[in-house]
Image (cartoon, rainbow, N blue to C red; front, side, top):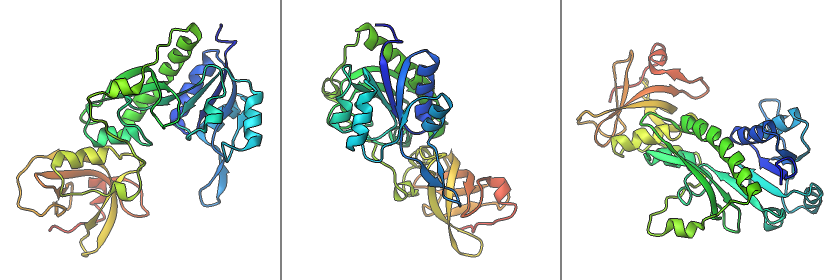
Amino acid sequence: MKKEDLRIVYMGTPDFAVAALRALVEGGYNVVGVITMPDKPAGRGHKLQYSPVKQYAVEQNLPLLQPAKLKDEEFIEALREWKADLQIVVAFRMLPEVVWNMPRFGTFNLHASLLPQYRGAAPINWAVINGETETGITTFFLQHEIDTGNVIQQVSVPITETDNVGDVHDKLMNLGAELVVETVDAIIAGTVKAIPQEEMAAGIELKAAPKIFKETCRIDWNQPNKRVYDFIRGLSPYPAAWCELKNAAGENVVVKVFESEKINEAHNLTPGSIKTDGKKNLFVATQDGLIAIRSLQLPGKKRLAIEDLLRGYQFANE
């Protein structure tokens, strides 16, 4: 079979999913339809906003479906009419069996971790939060339990000491686009030898990647220095770690912290207390050192480097 003859339906929503779709389209693969989330109201005027995947699909004149419910009969019928040989899912929703089991070559998913590690909604965040030095990207066939299907291919990526989640996201997005194309080629060539995740998981401790909520992002200054540092970069730039700090007026202010640095310095401060020169430096005590905050955001304000913020705003030394 030639790549022009394989009918592909692509499913995805955010920027992360655009790269692989673009690689397929520009590579001459036969994308017969795209499925993405319904438009969402955004901004002050609540104007409906396209997902990044829809934006690209519209620009390329690709047929598009935006079902509110994936078990809706009207959607299922429209999907059948595309006569897909293969479906590809990148950063979308959990599919019902009637959808993922429809094409003759099945449905494969691109997941931003080295499965079976970090199954779940936020694999990139949790890999950085947990101080991993390596993560990766995986393609696997969908089956009943989420993120548990047989693995087709994987590529590993180093996580450096200074990478934040945005840096790792971009590395994986670009590699993921290449891996999707390689996986489609392997399916066309009939060379896929998918490996059950149960075999890969034997004898190792699995780490999960659950969805992240606002309360998940609160900094616990009672943790060791490295743990706090990894936590901040694992949530930067989005959704961002936060904490309460006391300003010069004695008020507790909720701030988002985007950049920090580990200072391995002994101290007698209570974890969470502040040490600042009021000019260029703001340190917060942890269990075994100090975290130098390099950029943060006050409520209703834009993100600023700490020296810029301290020109017009002061925190209390404790």
